[in-house]
Length: 239
Image (cartoon, rainbow, N blue to C red; front, side, top):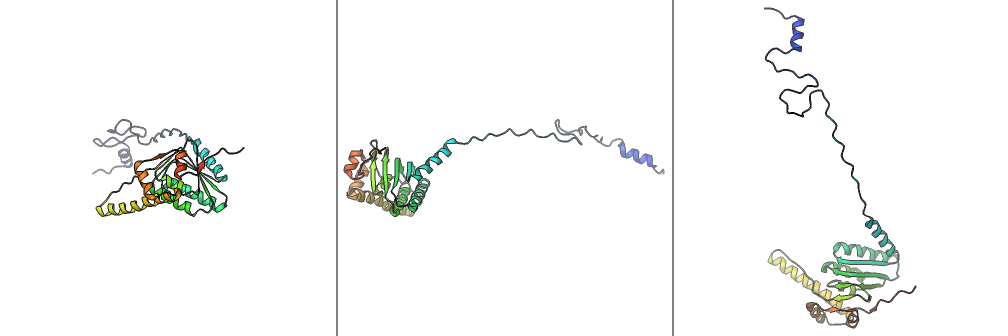
């Protein structure tokens, strides 16, 4: 039996014996690897840099914020479109802030206003506790529960193009029979509160208001003044 010398040991470590898989050298691909895979000892290429993203700021957002700030400085609150819970929260905060800052009248601009019943009742409750006189100026079409907001203002004026639509609120319920029945009872109380508020402002009977709402009665400015919903036309401001 021969004892391997140091040269044979070093040779076997560098050159693999026959039948053993060939060891890859640095920079050469491993046999059997798919094309495109990195070779041993070669650093992976850096990924392509991400394309730069350009952010466009909405110029209308800053413009609207500045406009609302200037209006609030003059104690003017603007409401337009559909009054939902989010819009009523903002309006309530503005009204309460102006009321806390002073006793001068607050001008509430109602432009083409509709309202959800629950949101309208919420804003009506806020108007009840505002100490400063709230002067409502109605323009465009005011309809449905939004008339309750208008009726909750001590002073009510209208622009020449205004119109007013008495209509029944629309509500949807779902769930079990018991839950639907409870919702119907609650909705009936809320609708009664709305019609009672309009009746109180106009000096009419609540059942007459309810009947006009069922028929979807539309009032012009002149008819709204005769109805008691509006007190007078908005006049031009003196220079």
